[in-house]
Amino acid sequence: MRTTVIGVMGPGNGAREIDRHVAKELGSAIASQGWILLTGGRNTGVMEAASQGAKQAGGLTIGILPTATDEGMSEAVDIAIFTDLGSARNNINVLSSHAIVACGMGAGTASEVALALKAKKPVILLNCDRTTQAFFENLSSDNLWIAETVEEAIAILQNALIKG
Image 1 (cartoon, rainbow, N blue to C red):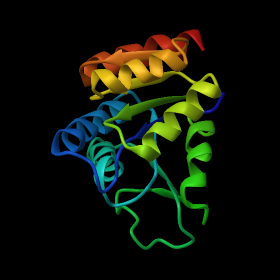
Image 2 (cartoon, rainbow, N blue to C red):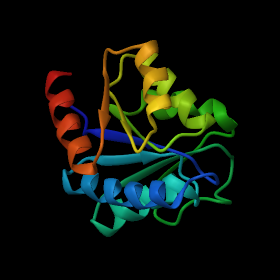
Image 3 (tube, one colour):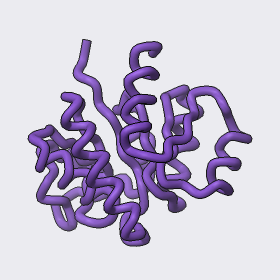
């Protein structure tokens, strides 16, 4: 059985400070579980913060980059996958992960959450407002959880992965 890969998705340039703070804590918690962190690999927003958190906790990080080169790549990415696919890489992010945690929300993150729900992957919304939560709950309440804290997200992941 392959090692558990947890995808952390969230805004890049549009990330709020709280999104970056929570993502860094989440990356660290994922690494502490012995799971591999997967992000979009860029050196901005949630991707950068989660990767930094995982690296600081001694974890392994994968970055699925939208480009063909390492320009703009996070220095905290251990394994870089260069796709040259732009936003089309979002499906690779989802299908390569056992579960997805959306930390904050933007258009790219929304597409990843929708793809994950369609693929029947466990999805956790963390640090997302009530309007966003309601939207995704209306799409599919199966495999969708809402977490208020990183600790709650980790507990949900542990449960979802056991059932999966």
